[in-house]
Image (cartoon, rainbow, N blue to C red):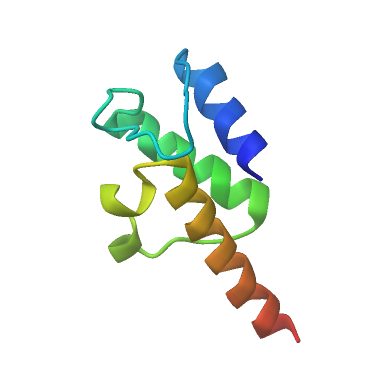
Length: 82
């Protein structure tokens, strides 16, 4: 999962991410307009949906946080399908 997120951000935002814990917003590697593009790509790739109240920088500021959000959504989705 992290490979997709990492590669997508680096390729489409022309930045280099050095750590999964690096602050993407504070380091200027993600801006608000790209953030929405990233969310749409994640939702489409993983078949998940983020609620408006979840779409805050604190939930998506690092690769690790993004992975956690995706993982949580996928677990909920998987539990609903059972």
